[in-house]
Image (cartoon, rainbow, N blue to C red; front, side, top):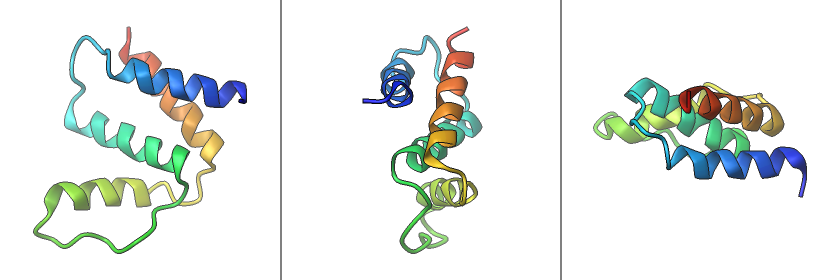
Length: 85
């Protein structure tokens, strides 16, 4: 397993142990970086306008289109580290 992958998995575990819950904007950023880092570019259809949460998540993820999985994983690691302080 690569060092980046190991650090990404550690950041995933650390994100569940944060002392305070991040705001919604930060949670969306975390979600989109996680998805881009683990799956790649957004796939599937955009959720309908009545499903606000799923649509916001999809839009945040789709906004990272073209970002490499490694870059997204590193950004996720950095974000979680900044929230731990």
